[in-house]
Image (cartoon, rainbow, N blue to C red; front, side, top):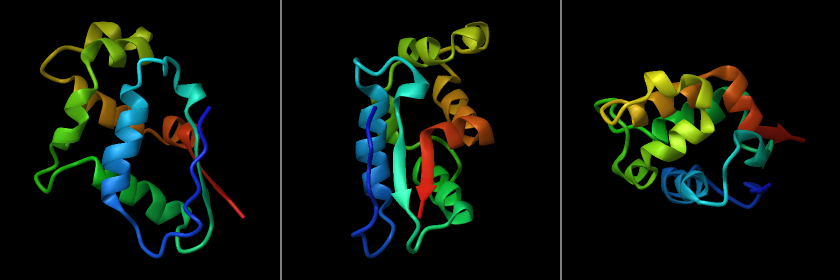
Length: 115
């Protein structure tokens, strides 16, 4: 389980999400969504802008997945979402991942705000 702390940050950083969070997802030792947790201290971040900013950081301006996500292989997505394996293919697996991350229950299982 991994914990991240946003306390000392003066402003939001898409680059950290694109680099560290994507690397966490791509890590071969990471095999279950429930084992990844990013915890943020409520400072200049609230529930509304946390999700909005994370999802925005993972998409290009045209809405497609950012290039950094390409380090995550299709096999990893299938491993994380085995019940959906029949719906995951090489043409849609990154979009599938983003749709899953946007799901409220899945998002809240990974990202948490604390006082």
